[in-house]
Length: 102
Image (tube, rainbow, N blue to C red; front, side, top):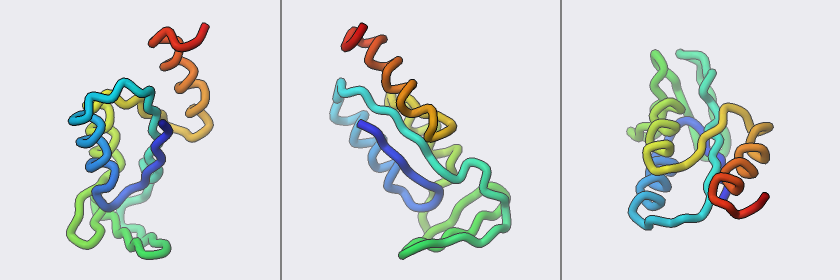
């Protein structure tokens, strides 16, 4: 499973809780966009309006800094990469660690 998320909202934290609760053994690699989002910069796209203040992202009263999402996903056993370019190599490494490939 490849999970790609972003700052703002709680979907990634919700996914981490589901992953943890389910006890799935499927390999999961994630990337969270927005780790370098500058504080005070207004950003948005279809249906999402994010305003970062001192490293916090606020979306309709939700939580969701990149750092918080990454921490929560890692605590759920997900491998999190810093760049989408590293997803493939990370997934291969997870496969190797679990004996799913040579």
